[in-house]
Length: 134
Image (cartoon, rainbow, N blue to C red; front, side):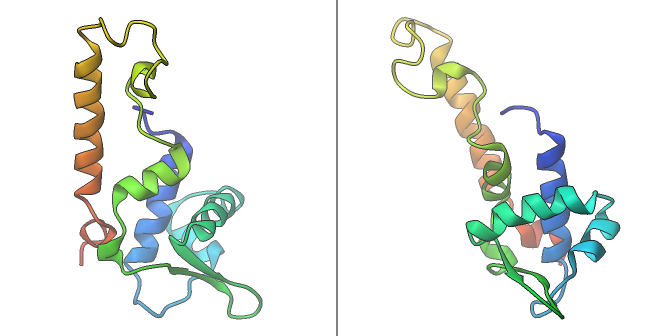
């Protein structure tokens, strides 16, 4: 994944909005969707994924909605992106050893590895707290 999909963009918008809310405020999906201009059905699927891995907590029924699963300073942009987009892969050769028959002889392979590491490091260095502008 080098280019963020619409799903990735929507995921970031939704969770950053959540991170900007008071810690104990349970937000309705419809409110989040309206605030960040994302279709509610699409956001519901994304937040279901987030809920499974603990990035958000979901509450059912009256007064139900979503809360951030951890403090915003403890959730990185890397986690959010990889939760919806999967691992960051600039080229298939960095997926794993043997994925490319030339990975031992290729002079470009180490460059793709560096690109992957640097993109991951940048995303890992940004938390939801940073993005929520607190």
